[in-house]
Length: 429
Ligand code: SDX
Image 1 (cartoon, helix red, strand yellow):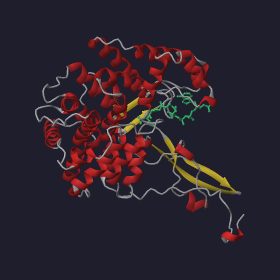
Image 2 (image 1 turned 45 degrees about the vertical axis):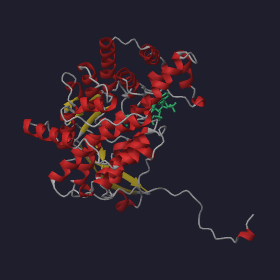
Image 3 (image 1 turned 135 degrees about the horizontal axis):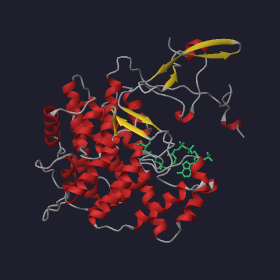
Image 4 (image 1 turned 180 degrees about the vertical axis):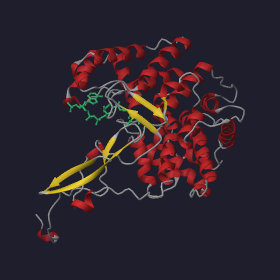
């Protein structure tokens, strides 16, 4: 007998089913609430609302658990391969050798942009925010690939997914090249996913960029750690947009815009700016911590806190290790890393953060790694988007395959003027 919830309103008791997920999470199913009671449930920012059921990612915020299709995140650390994790998230299992080969060939064959798309970059100022360009150019892909606006077969979907995952690298690299007035480097079909991205970012016509294994490993892991995070703001945005049957490109372009916000994916930029502020002597770590505890300052300890994790974000723990390991192997002594560790130590022993269960999140260390690789700060959130794209695609696909999918249309509680009348301008005060 499944559990039920009873709700009594104005003396009438209603019964609502309780649903349970595969990991024991429970929710009151309120799909019949309004038809039964005439009332809706109010939950601004959806902190108490499960918007869907999903089989893609499981998070336990109290235990600091994150699993992709059941596989714990930590198991990807030994031999990180972003392409196979993308397949896992989207198609529900790790690719076999034939699937991996097919997908890799698709990624290689779709890395180029239509030559006319390069003219679009000319229209952007060199100082344009990279996330603005990325969102615009992902949407623009729908103009150059009209055959993928409607996906009727698994083959068409796989082709569109591969095209997007491949081209986001090229769009990101060309955004960077344009900002520096550098010539675009064509993708090299001999290079695997990450190496090809680094080649397009950093090679010159007169000098090829040769990435080292440590950098490739770190970047594979960074992209894997960002690949999905269930119903976060940007993924919920992709689902919302996709629920109107908007195409995959338009839905992911909307996800880029949501990710841009400093409370979400934009935090990795704000973390570096915060660390540089402290490094430049404008503030000490202790002063910054005190500011971030003072609500009136409007300052937050960026890279700290999370809506779900009330324990360590497992991604932050792994990224701190990658940080230490990569900087040591590259022989980089970045003072910002020491400042980050000092901030973490202070915060983890400060009552304000302890009682609010505020721990480092995925954005706290990722920027220091990207800096060490040579990625400029204003490109950090673009790297987050490259990592998160497979998650967005997986959720868009999961929702679109659901025969019960309906357009998302939340309700509201109106608190505005009651009925009033039009007043002619000559009679207005
Ligand atoms: C990501 O959803 C996801 O999964 C996101 C993400 C993903 O993979 O998609 O994990 C990626 O977005 C990580 C978060 C990156 N953002 C930041 O690092 C920005 C700094 N963090 C915060 O602004 C905040 O912690 C959020 C936005 C992450 C979470 O905000 P919530 O859940 O709405 O929490 P809240 O704002 O209600 O804060 C609760 C309390 C408040 O104090 P009180 O009113 O209870 O006294 O904690 C305080 C807040 O003032 N607080 C902070 C703080 N974060 C929360 N105080 C100082 N510094 C902080 N960073």
